Structures are given as structure tokens and as C-alpha cells.
Amino acid sequence: MNKELRILISGGGTGGHIFPAIAIANELKARVDGVKILFVGAEGRMEMERVPQAGYEIRGLKVMGFDRKHLLKNVKVIYNYLKGKREAANIIKEFKPDVAVGVGGYASGPAIGAAEDLKVPVLLQEQNSYAGVTNKMLCKRAATICVAYEGMEKFFPEERIVLTGNPVRQELMGNALTRELACRALGLEANKRTVLIVGGSLGARTLNESVLLHLDLIRKQRNVQFYWQTGKYYSQEIKDALEEKIKPDNLHVSDFIADMAKAYKAADLVISRAGACSISELQLLGKPAILVPSPNVAEDHQTKNAMALVSKKAAICVKDAEARMALLPKAITVVNDAAQLNTLSQNIAKMGRPNATKQIVDEVLKLVNS
Image (cartoon, one colour):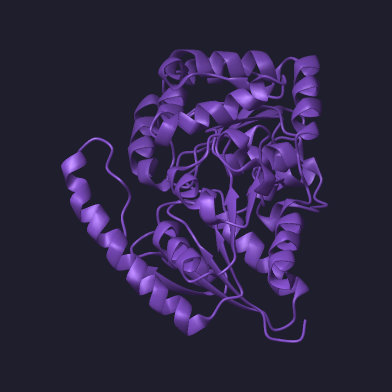
């Protein structure tokens, strides 16, 4: 490549958008000497912290998501979108990207829209089985749309779809740690089955209440231990509840898991929300899982993510409304069933796409060269 390559990446709002964006940037940096990468995100959102921590420059726009419940409030949303698009156009004219990559989330709307207006080739990356509003809005002028699920032609122009899978956090891959060492590092017993309960960095109220309602059932499990990430938001509330109810010895509690590679390695069964990135990690690691889709997401896309796995007998789904009473008893039954764990592991591993990040960057470079 004779000239300096410049790539703009936009999107964010949640880890499900930010982790893939950073993985794409890291792959570009590893493969192209001297590549210049600029992120564009939404002011006040987590990308403004996570992207600089990963070593990249980011510019923030004053944009907000569409309010589906209070339509009149969207006057301000539209105003901020148009203003953000003008600001993004100025950023693009200054940075002069060869390609713009949109990873979804409302932050990518004005930035990628401005890139399309300025005739910058655009690649979209859609993580979910049900396409997000922003990517559906941007797809008509996008050159390439990288997706993680089959059947996405119902949302996007079929001839521009490339099935790649989702990028995942690189620290999870190629980890030589044994299960025994992972258990020891987390204070767990290697001779017991382990259920990992993780509701994301902020936590998930339904998962947390499911545990608190079944402490006596957990206490009775002689050969099963539980590693529970409560999320920082709920940390103090749960600490107080466990002091009052007395925490079972086989229940290990953490507000945040810094090293997910160890946690996954130790786990025989994972209880998780059904976000696209979480599912992609479980697929690549071949982890048996019970998925509890969040009801608080656009278009109920987490249920659609989960059912894409259930249809292939690659995961179990428990509805959020039923989880408080049903989740822990179900998890205990499953984790004690070696045959079912093996079937789930084999089937979910078949859905993994370990070369997703490489393939997406291949598509970015195709756009540069074309």
C-alpha cells in the first residue's frame, strides 16, 4: 500500500458495539504499517472512555438515541442528529478517511451518514440476528455489510452481505490456561462443576434476583459451585442482602470480572444475557449456555439472537419473565447432566467463526484497493 491508510470507525453506546470496533482497529493496526485510525462516538457514552484506554483517538458527537416511548421528545433527537451530522462531515473532511466502518449504535448514524454523503466507501458491521435501526437506515448506500447470522437478506441488499461472524475480545483467544489453574486463580475448587453467572459489566437485575431467591437451593449443591458477577451497579445492594441471608460457601461473588478468559475456562455452564458479543464468545469457546434475553432492548433482538442458537440445539433459553423462579433449578439440572453439556458444547462450537475479525478487515482492505 503506497499511501498512508486512514480508517474512520464509528459506533458505540454498549460493549456489544465497542468491543468489535476495537478488535477491528487492532487487526488493522497489526496488518497495515502506519495505519491511521480515528473513532467517532457519542459524548458521555462508554466509548469515550474505552476507546482511549485501547490506545485510539476518538471524537465525540452530541447525539442521542430515538425515544420509542415519548415520540415528542424526538424533536431534540432529530435536531442533535442533524447537528452531529454536520460536525461529523467536518471531521471527515479534516481526517480524509479511505473507508468508514460503522459498527452500529446511534452514534454511528450521523458519522456514517456524513461519510456516505461525502462518497467515502462504507462498511457496516451488524452483530445481531435482527438488524439495528441505524444499520438498516445506512445500508442502502453501504458498499459492504458484514453480518454474524444467516438470513440477513431480509434487512440488507443480499449482494452486499458478507457472512463473517462477530469480532471478539482478543484476550479470550489462544489462552493456554488449564481449567485447574483457572479455578485456583478464582478461588474455586477444580473437582466441582462450575456455573458462571454473568450479566454484563453493569449487571442484570433479573439474573441477580434469580440467585438471591435460590440461596438455599445453591447451598444444598455439594458438587456444584457458582461464580456470580453481580455488576457494579448492584454490588452494594447484593452485599447487604447476602449479609442478611448468609452467603452459601459454594457461591463466589464478584461485582466485575476483569479476566473473562479465566472465568470462561473455569465454567462448565454459563448463564448470560443474549447480547451478540456474549454469544459470539460462547460460540468460539464452545461453552454450554443458558441464555436469558434482556427485554429492554430494541426490537427484542436478544430473544431473536437466543432462538437462532436454540433452533440448532446450541443453547437453552429461559424467558426473562420466568427466570426468577426457573433459572437456577434449570441450571442445576443441566450442569449435572454430562451428556447435555457435551451436546450443547459441540453444537454451539459449530456456530463459531474464529476468523471474523480477519475477514472483516479483508473486506475493509478490498474497499481501499477498489
